[in-house]
Image 1 (cartoon, rainbow, N blue to C red):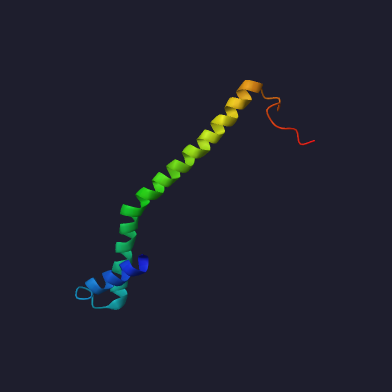
Image 2: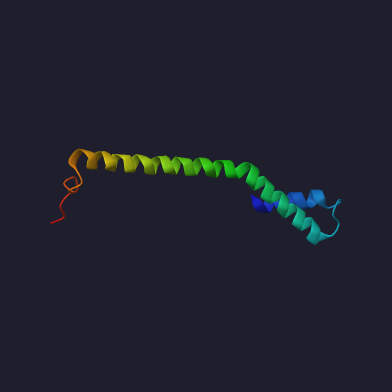
Length: 79
């Protein structure tokens, strides 16, 4: 996705920035803004979903400990 974005941006900026390194720098900055604006929202949601899953597991464990006390009776014996 990044390569395609940069390629299209470079083509569109050619008339404004004829010097290729400058055009590449502007295209890269545009990519960073695009990622910050659009893709960062998805990662926050993914992180939030992951935290909810972890929180549920921790709450289950704490409920078991609360029912049985903190003596370790709720864990299976490996012996």
